[in-house]
Length: 163
Image (tube, rainbow, N blue to C red; front, top):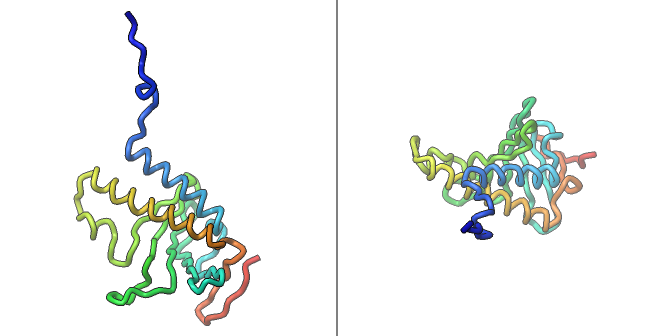
């Protein structure tokens, strides 16, 4: 007699690494839709929606296939004096993915999980960071942040609306 597969057995399972790659792709779509950072030049940008909590987007470096940036609010951690929350992000233009490399100054993955962590622990850490980024991007979109609210801020403190 032939056994019928249960419905659960027919659904392919997604590995944790596959889930992480899916988060990278989803975060890419959210970030590009919000701020189009792959079209920005190096420098500091601010997004203000009138709620007193301005978002700062620092485009650190632009390369042919990647854009390095940092997202943060103007809030400083009282202990370190560094912006908090803060996420360092790498956008891969060719792969259409966005990876959170670390979330706080001095808190790179090596600082959190050590130099030679087990692969499972490293994937778990990356899942947490990139889930945080996805939720933050959704929150920013709900608040009204986006390309229309993004202004370039130069070192002299002058701002200008992007066209």
